[in-house]
Image (tube, rainbow, N blue to C red; front, side):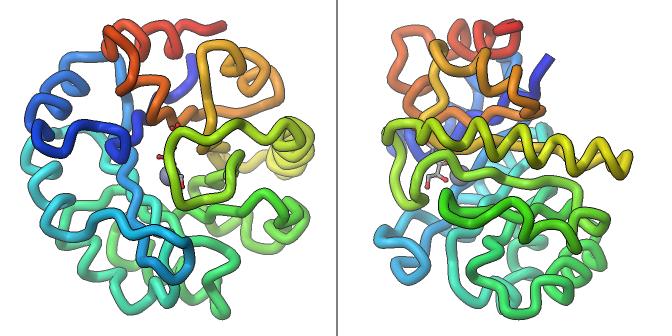
Length: 216
Ligand code: DX5
Ligand code: ZN
């Protein structure tokens, strides 16, 4: 069964407590927290105070997706805020290997996110050092966008690379995941599904999470 990581970006921010309670009582595995800085992406979301509060509201894995430049400046602060998995963008890191060592040195799992245009082959020499690849299936910055179909090819290629080396790397697919396309995403080789709008804009978010969890 896939790992399900609902994205809080699509939750009602006036009722975050309710969103956390719903997720805690659901089959969700991870809380996906999208941090945007208005520089790496053309949007600004939330930061430490929100993550700290969410951390207090759950014992589930906090999966923090940094869409920010110079993420190395804040690694320790995200650890303190409560991140379990910290994901940085390959496009935002000049010294990616150093950043990964920093994240793991602080006791977090390390993720690398790749934009839709970034070839999966660029992960070849970092795969052995990381825990998660966050494969962007939309251009990062906003929830509610449409899934970019070519991502399926990228997932297949990446899964081949990971399996060929026998690595325990999790492929997480982020952006435009729906009840309609989730099956083909898993079929292509993904292990984890992020879902924002599909979960939080549905009439019964917990039921939708369950449907995603049991999609195959
Ligand atoms: C996009 C974020 C996603 C977003 C997904 O930049 O990284 O995590 O919240 O939202 P949906 O599932 O609505 O595309
Ligand atoms: Zn995300």
